[in-house]
Amino acid sequence: MKPTDFAYRVSTYLSTYLPGVLGLSTNTVMSYRDMFKLLIEFCEKELHIKADKIMLRDLTRTTIERFLDWLETDRQCSVSTRNIRLAAVHAFARYLQRELPEFMFQSQQLLSIPVKKTKAKSIDYLTLDEMKFLLSRKRKTKHTCS
Image 1 (cartoon, rainbow, N blue to C red):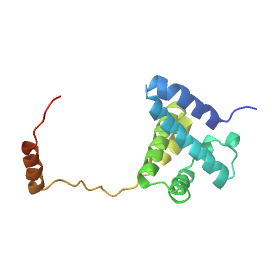
Image 2: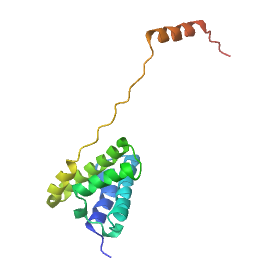
Image 3: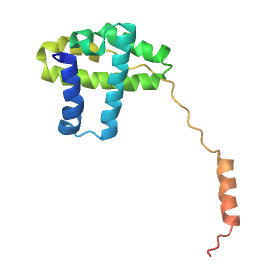
Image 4: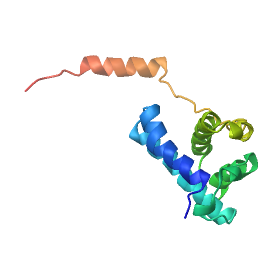
């Protein structure tokens, strides 16, 4: 069986380009790999495209947007996780632009998918009185060494 263009490019991207050319860590490569595993699962379950039949032409903006929605709704992923997966899609699209100029327009469509805004987490600080209290406790405690 002849591999599809998707299979060839994903394999080369994960095994050669990310670690060898970009010098990314094993953990980063594994994170990108996990995105592809999820994308393949999505293609099989939702688009009814078998893993060995996925083609680069299947990676349309609509498909990736549906994939991202699927992550949030069906898999119950947070917006932050969704955005991490989108970052991996964007990185792959930039790679494809360089490797396959004929994929340039489709890559630009993928790169135009925006990240979702997340709620900014508030940082709780100690009040001045709380800080003074803690510092006063520090002075009252004697440290002994054994």
